[in-house]
Length: 251
Ligand SMILES: [Zn+2]
Image 1 (tube, rainbow, N blue to C red):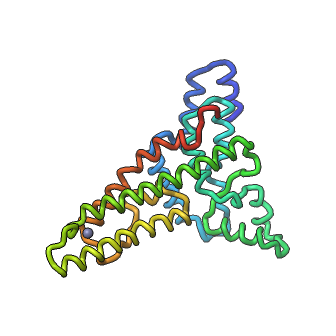
Image 2: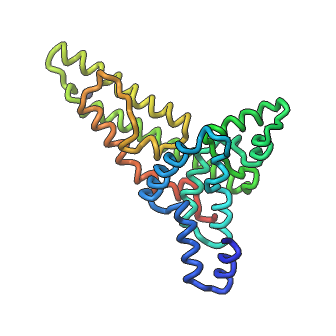
Image 3: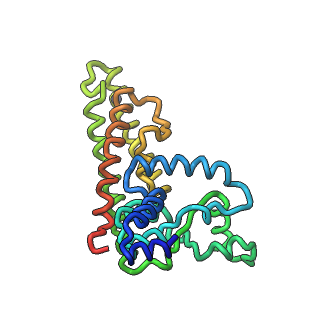
């Protein structure tokens, strides 16, 4: 597809170029709704494939290539999704290791064995080694900003929830105990979100309204609903801010 994109760009054949950009944007959408749609599809796809002998990773879009094409052919709209996906991956998930890991000839190399296991459980990779120094800086900066953003969301949600609690002004001892439980449970809820972030680096997933929660049982209904709504309410904001977080201004 790239040769056609190159020619369409070179000779300014807009309709062909637009057509190809539309196809690439399917994988790296500029809209959060479409991102969610893709993620749901991906879950279904993975659930059918993981556990088999084949490697799901190679059948899925790779972010370095998307970034390279975005910059080379001036398609900035796909950068947000590509960089965000990259930010979810550990730098060790380097595609360079795929061939050796999948060939089964690791010869006791622990790193390759771990990589093979990662791939077999549906792990995804990127060409980390091909990113430029500037792109690595953008990535590091973006990851830092995303982490700050998500920590702030959780802190704010916890503080605001404690004010909304139906037992915020307890009238008797029983309500004082419930109030105390609610405060502890809200903190637990917030901490478990942060711990999940540490594991997955995927706040867009954690902030989904339908994201499975296992709230502590002593949390009152008002607190739980308020906390969930606040976290979910910041999701679109996060998506909107990603462009600045990764600082695409100078590419
Ligand atoms: Zn409460």
